[in-house]
Length: 221
Image (tube, rainbow, N blue to C red; front, side, top):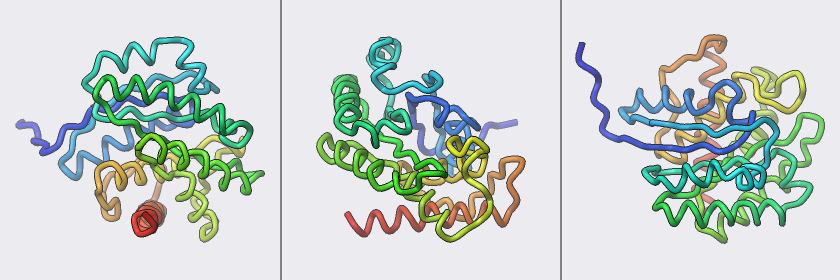
């Protein structure tokens, strides 16, 4: 059988923790992209509960970045650090951004979401990501804002897992939809990829929420 040819090949490195690893976010994104004739090759460096500083000090991520060949390097900060210490987060991102630019890659910031018990945290999380991104010319993938909008209008599917922090499959799928819209400029609405465990109505709602969020973001500069 002949393999389907893809018009776009994108190499991505993800650096983060369980917020990226849970439900295989990179894999969900790659499956969706394949339906739009884009091939995403991805690698993940993940340590449970890790901050970007933890990754930087471990040196592994920096060595992988230096090998080059990545179109995008996605940075996911520890989920509460942007609220507790936005200055420290910005320092962490700057460290990686220098290495990423030196390797000829583009820095992407994976904006995460507030915990279910503290929805008010989304505003400082968003501010921390957008501020350092603007400073460095990085791309922000506003997953947290898409979560916030979705939760304001829908009771299901549930995005937070039982620990009120990590993503359910629906939460990770919504994140993948936002990545698809921002990085590939592709409308996720209508993508047929259906992860087991999500029904068609849920998938449609999540796709629409992601596209609406990204459209609003583009209109607001």
